[in-house]
Length: 196
Ligand SMILES: [Zn+2]
Image 1 (cartoon, rainbow, N blue to C red):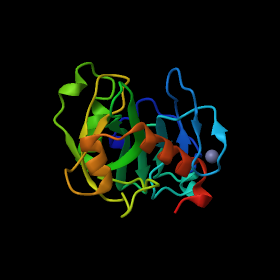
Image 2 (image 1 turned 90 degrees about the vertical axis):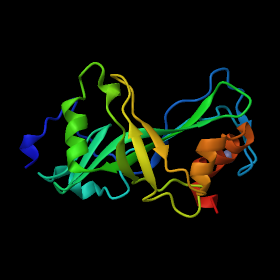
Image 3 (image 1 turned 60 degrees about the horizontal axis):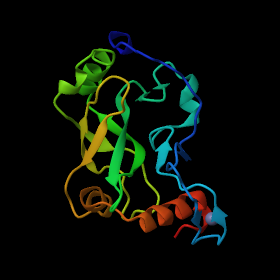
Image 4 (image 1 turned 180 degrees about the vertical axis):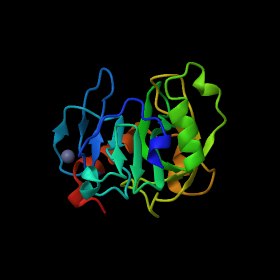
């Protein structure tokens, strides 16, 4: 069944599901941490999950499981791609983003895989996806929020648009967040033991 799909850019990893930092603000003065009180030299503007929440490191060697930096299959029947929940930062040009996993139907995952290296792929209609990353700092959980996944040009991760509900994450994507909120998120993610 899996052999019917193509696997462009396949890079197996044994990565766990923790959120890791990807990049920081340009000309970043750092920030005073509300959590530990220290001055951290960088304010991260992106956190990304290495695998969907349902991933188990024991899957890494399984024939019917696959995990790359952008695609994941679990037990031959659950299909995921990584995308970005982008949140504008109010009063600046910066964008904060969460690198998250969304669950696609087998049909849409197959379409995305077929078009992975095709110029113009951004003309694809959005794919429906269930959010499969449990982001810190949000309550209730972000797991299984409904999204639309918008394909972007070659080399760019898809844009994940949340269903416009009153969930705090959906509200933040719609209205934007302040730089103080970015600092608050950073403090919580950098010190997970003290979060909540
Ligand atoms: Zn700190």
